[in-house]
Length: 203
Image (cartoon, rainbow, N blue to C red):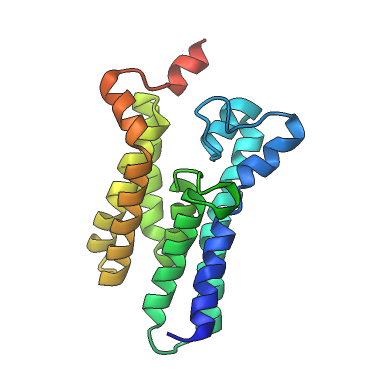
């Protein structure tokens, strides 16, 4: 692996580690790491600061998953090990969001950034998972459940679409990371104590 490839992968991690949710919330005087779910992702931002700020955070987190891979592919061209380098770039971006060096390795859950990764690699699979997410959240009221189902389904969509094995493996790796970061949510879902958007809306 060339030095350029190493720098691209490290750069992808550093871009993924940028905590957009935290940066956007600073002007409001609210530290999103201490309120709500204490997560720096779009869901907690929307819960604490409103839908507009939540959507902006979502778009920025998706973008930091998409553009590092786009630039990596552009720079390395059709060189040797191209797929491996692109895959490592995508993985590094998601790991950066989840374990950002800027925040003592305490970050988000990687759903939006993972969405950006596969928006670049296989947009149709993202569309299918997005539909699954919407249906799951609409029926259950739990964003976490929608995120878990959508991330778990990506490898299946890629397989059914006939995508390359390395993309399927990357999606499985990212999916495992997302589920690991959602362990507290899974425990609350099983215990019936997870926060529901339906209940919040009624309240």
